Length: 307
Image 1 (spheres, helix red, strand yellow):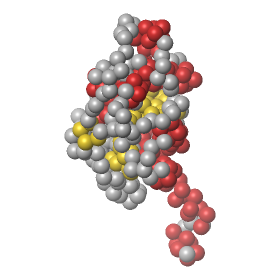
Image 2 (cartoon, one colour; image 1 turned 180 degrees about the horizontal axis):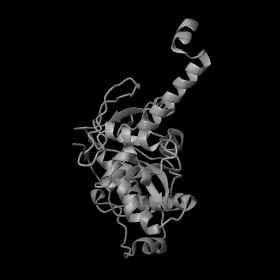
Image 3 (cartoon, helix red, strand yellow; image 1 turned 90 degrees about the vertical axis):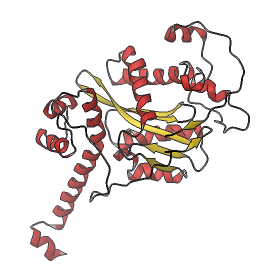
């Protein structure tokens, strides 16, 4: 090998340092692509150079950012296909395990996605994990960085702590790099969870919808002014969404209430320390301005079909 290193003009140490830099750069590109796709949807007529300025990239130069966008179809007038393929960077692909399936209880499928939230010139990242059956947010994270250890990993750790799912749970995502990183997959496998991914980045409608709901119906109204406030307001938003906000697919019940009224024999959530289902009338009226109606103790039945 020494002769090989001399031939290519690198020392052994220099060669491995270069390889590590290349791997870090490739990982960063993979992590950025879903965020660029979301920015393109928010700013459909804005050029790539303007997207670079909006994103405020500190770790990638303008020319490299533009090249990344052009290579992945983000030029104006072109909807990015963003189809995953196995390539030399070792991108892992998982089959779509939920398409065409029917789900009848909680903790059968969790769906997840990462979104961004901008405050002044700063971008922050919010990761949500939602139970597909009950629509309850079971885990989330708010971070300053897009890496796995700040996004999907703490969100999954929270979800596992409060839900304690049995083996066989399906975890569905859009296939972003944070969902197939080594640390995330190690936790997935340790809990006997099955990874599932859509064919394209947009094939994760339920998770994308919860992003929009929390951001547009809650956080924007709370108007956080810095990162600390965003963390606090996101917690408040999740609490109100889970406990108070009626959901059309749950017979106008909030997700937490729906789970409590599931028929006997359905999967149990156990003791959920994430949030209590009890919410005072004052808090409900303050956040949603609607008159409380007497609760009924009817059991609810629901089937989720994924098309």
